[in-house]
Length: 139
Length: 139
DNA sequence: ACGTATTTGTACGTATGTATC
DNA sequence: AGATACATACGTACAAATACG
Image (cartoon, rainbow over all chains, first blue to last red; front, side, top):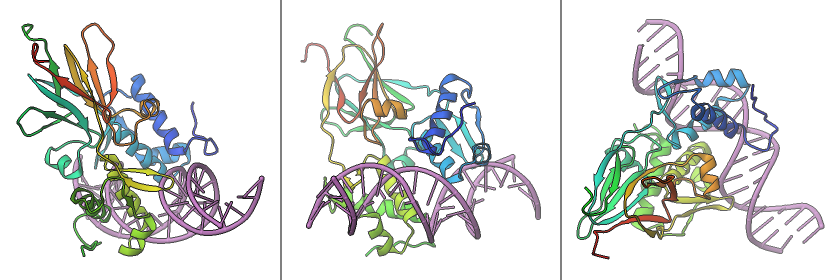
């Protein structure tokens, strides 16, 4: 069993985040699986709730888990609708909090910005949209 | 002067984040400007350092500020190099922590993923890259 | 080279509030 | 109503990085 070492160079909360991330990536914690409650990690590893919360916050910002008042779960791989764009520029950034609320985005989800010539930029949720780039005459 | 109300419906740390975000968006805190030290907000608003740190963390995750051991600054608008892609799919997500370190990304910076047919996905820093979509015969 | 001041980072504690079942 | 679990908010202490004299 991998244990958390408070004397290690790496902070306790990052060690826990690494641990849980590996469990998610290995499939030990599959999509939609329940993440143990904060107090479980506190007791199992003898660390503070503060450290557990920081670890979970990090995983949330990485888009790996979703947290509600009932607990956290492994975030399933998003299904993205393909948007076809003829001409323009596409880039990504994090939404501001007001934007995030308006677009009803989970924490840890970027926005995809599409700038088309002569139009307002279009702001799309990056967990629900992807840009299909297509050579003309092939679709 | 806008003050922070501990009895408001909105949490103290989000009120402070809103306040500083507005100062950034209005230009009162221009790009590269120094953000006051945590202790300044603690004293000026009579709130805990914990709340100030949570507010700054939120702004960091929104990509609005950059924090070092010497303090925080307003993040300048990123200059993105345009990548031209003939054919494929582009989407965005947050990097995991190991990815973030490897790509030397600031917190709050997504990655742009380009999937081309028959190739490994290309992972680009979203603050330095954008995808140019071009109709054939127009570039 | 060294200590000091400043500022953020980590880690603990406690208490209370809010949402959900 | 009660149990569970996360959210907010205060406190303390010490570590680490950086800049300055």
